Length: 545
Ligand code: PFF
View 1 (tube, rainbow, N blue to C red):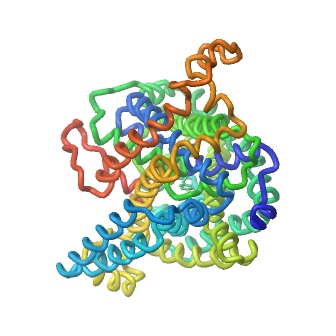
View 2 (cartoon, rainbow, N blue to C red; view 1 turned 30 degrees about the horizontal axis):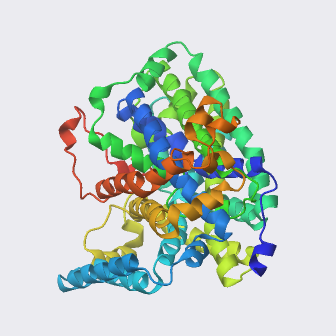
View 3 (cartoon, helix red, strand yellow; view 1 turned 90 degrees about the horizontal axis):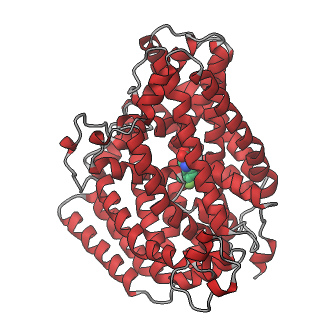
């Protein structure tokens, strides 16, 4: 009770929507989305992505925000508060994990064996609270590699200002990028600057820090994006890029594209790790959670879509290959800008845009970790942010020096190799893959928890505050504009928005996420040759080439 009294809240509904949209809009939208779309059939992929966002992303977003507002806690506290005293499903799941762990130990797969046994024991003892713990750990892991890439944008802003981005060819840009990320001093310095910004904002609290900066940065982000789009579209030959980006080519779409779209939707909407639970915990009872979720999802999709419009026309107009994948932002685009009049200005605008997007996402990741230590461990916000922001920085430095390979951190590699035998090519790639797993698993568990454990009824009771239409008005009456006509709103309704949402949360989302999850961990092979040109590894999107 006492905890509820002193909890901060957002100053306004708009503040919450902008902060949550700021969390969602990030490197995932401006960097990942455009080129993944290009590789997976352009317009056809955009359509599939939109369907995934509407059918899976939006329902899970509402689950997270409702969980947060109801419990007014961080992810660990939220699951702890609603954890049932006994739960056969959790025990079954925990024992299953322990069994798998022991089998792995017997088969001498020590790392996985220890991990599975440990998680199994925790699930058996603490049940659903473990999902919240996984969210906090995911915040830690994601920010440590996310901040490295965000740090590069800081470096590239510096390069743009000092006129050192004047590349005539993509090869020259690639050499420069390689030497930049291969310079430990520079990449750690940039990482430090980014983390210091995140820490300073989160330290200032929910209203004074996160909300204030989001209200300032989100409009700036739109402004920068629109400037870039106008510049790109007014170049001669830009329409070829628009066609490439938006022409629906269904022949390139495969089962894999659909699953890539599901994974991208989770990452891009910041779902599956409790960021929206945490932000939801600062929302007041009067706020309409349903329309807020739609606004957040809508803004995220809009920015992703606009980012494609900003990138492809310019790339095509200047005759560059659109499929340079992860290198698009740091190699192809600087070269493109260099050939435009006032190129330095456009490069500066673009990297500032990336930094703004990364910053509003970075603070949400740090806030998840901070909220846990403040709520559950009674730390002061300042101490929690400084200490754990500092720890994330330290882990980030290991990622920063091992972006391409393990060479500079051999002892860490040997330790991990002893435990897990097979490793990703770098610590950076390992963190990235780990986060893909965690988000998929976290999203699945959140949907299962809300759908089957907390219960749709309780969740709807929560969402009903501030949103009568959601639960109590007949769906067809709302859609037809007849909701205020009493004869269209009898006492008992079958088709409310809430009932449709419940079916999604209980059945459709979990099944879809399980399929996507199995694909992410490589247990589901949908036949790569379904598409004429196999697209590159989905897990490597944030990794440099
Ligand atoms: N949504 C962010 C992006 O698209 O870049 C990434 C992210 C932020 C993921 C916050 C998860 C999260 F909690």
